[in-house]
Length: 212
Image (cartoon, rainbow, N blue to C red; front, side):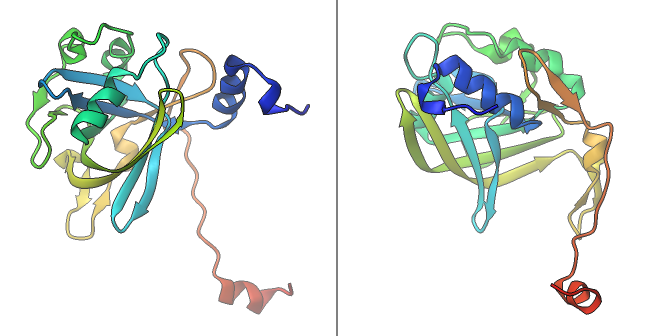
């Protein structure tokens, strides 16, 4: 079946892409308003984009009330935030922060999260997650009414000691983090319980053994 995206309503466009682009890692973003009010919210339009500088991208859709989401407003005002990664143990707390709470509500209190001061940015991090990344915005792109793409540099990383296999070689036990990811329909998530590995082929070995 084929779909002419430009002739479809917003809800249909969202379903097509979010159902197929999966699983998606979750950025549990902590941010602060210019007045210091703390906010926490998860976003699955998120990924790593580069390593020099270390860059992530974050997609923020419009609020249902036709305005910027609280996270977007905070990031525009302060240009700093923290990406916290979500494991199975924090799934319920993360889900609480999905609520469309009023802008003056601190979701970290609703979810009873334990916070810790960041090193280089003002917003605090969630201290109990497997990993957190302090970020500063490099560029914002408004892709639609109250819809934004945030390109940010990771300036500091926090990773729980129990997931460090070799600190000097920067080897981490990622499967042990038990990170969850966003899936297709409403409320669906995935676990990292079925993995497989493939070695990247060498072009030299490929041409030595085959004809192109």
